[in-house]
Image (cartoon, rainbow, N blue to C red; front, side, top):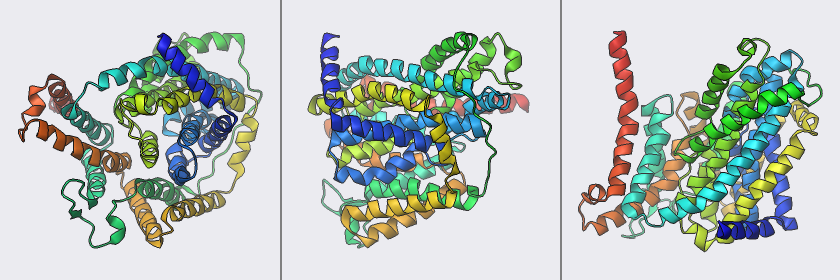
Length: 498
């Protein structure tokens, strides 16, 4: 414990430098603004800004990206409450009760419990990251290639086959990403794979380019084509404060939401949707005012889901930093940002780049305070962002993405490829193909291939290496359970209904 506190103190010393504080503030402010604007999430923003990794020092850029990530979760509740338009998928549940509270003149209380609940949950979750991330990293050091391959297999399975609307669509998207990851020179044989004679493909497909094309360009084109003409009526905001009774009703919901959200953030593809819905259902069942749910709006229905959302977002840093496994789209893009610096997240990161890791964790504490200050007194300023014309906003994103991608290699080919991937992103959104598996497959595919080859080398070419080692066997059983159990449950329900 003493060692962790000493490392955290060193992290605060790094994160509290004027330059890093500036990047943290810019990230938090930009993230809040992005969360407020409907249709633009942290994944789009981080993807669009990835090219800055070529110019900015690693610690500063990761603090900046982290600020965008959890700042967007704070800001997303504003449009959910005032417009009934979630800025982020994690704030969909907030709209259920928050907008009803706003309609009945209680928007200020809803915004206050949302901001304070986000601060409480984010702080508690950051303490848990501080305590448990080093423990997980110490354990992960003992794992070998067979175990790492099985962990990545579990990530592939959960991201693509379980939480999406269609397992087939999810697996299709995953294989698109895996195929992209195979393009380039084979590191062992030196043979060119799937380059179709294009010199730009010899070094592989840039993750940054695909991320910007799929999210920044694809999401922007999709919103402009299919959602750009929607106009929402905004509810009057009022004074942002809570009464003593509302404080009493909110704080137990904050704690319960945190307890639900953090574990879901730490598992592959846990996401924020499940814990927020679970928190809402829990608060509705435990509330002493059930008549307010669905009618005039219950404050617990805002407090619990918002806390669960922010705790889950913070929890995603545990598997990212300790195992190199992204459990959300944004953390997958953060993983590619680290790789741009030649850093491979995993248990060794805590020893090889200790100052960066602990500065990032310390910045979470600082960022939570910044976001509380930004959200409570300045909520009126963020609401004014909603008056920006959609056409100007979308044009700005496309210009910024184009300049950033072209600036990486000054290649016109990269621009054509980026917009081609953007059109692919539009088609995927239009026909309900999830985009997260593409990025996860592209980033983790080459790593999984390397671990598979190393595992077979250890086993002298025998596949039994995966079932003779207890940890990898357990992981394989979990993978099978994740794939088969939900389907068996559905088949059984269908048989009963039949």
